[in-house]
Image (tube, rainbow over all chains, first blue to last red; front, side, top):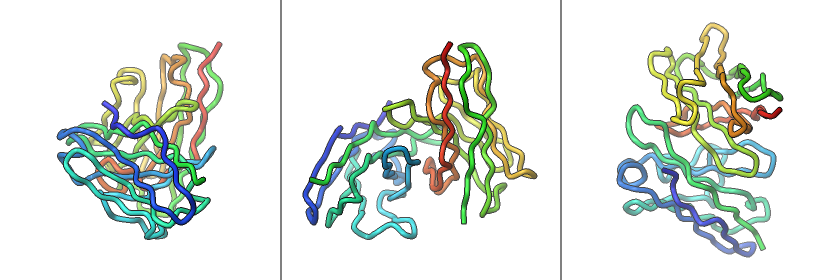
Length: 110
Length: 118
């Protein structure tokens, strides 16, 4: 089953916003393989966070990830206009299984 | 730098077939699991398949199992998705991606649009 994300989130420039991603003990809660993706309209998704809280090279440190139990979170600090996008979480769901994605959250910078 | 370039999408009638290709560069292709992921218009991301570096492990989503087949040719740095018995609900942008970590696509191609319609 898909992970659960809020459909929308918003914040003003300079503020912080947190997006949640709720799964189960079979995915988010069971492994430290939670990832987050940013997708601008008409573009391919971009990996922003992997293994719960690691940032790929080039991703600003304004983006951070965490996890507690079956819920993971993405926090974007110091919001900027270019952060407005759709954000998807993903998780490993066990060996020999495909991963699982959340339904996506549209982040609006007010 | 890592580059993934998909091709092969287009308009196909229900019941038809298409073969998508993804050419990779900028990394040792045979060392990595590769993924296919799709996104229906206005919808979220959906896992389609994975394949291991030496092709000894593959898996497909239940929604495409028995209709889609994932393969690769490491000599050509290429990943393929053979899609048969296509349905309207298969209409989507199809992305190939390189593994970053377990079930974590690190680099994505630009995507190729598949439209299934009569």
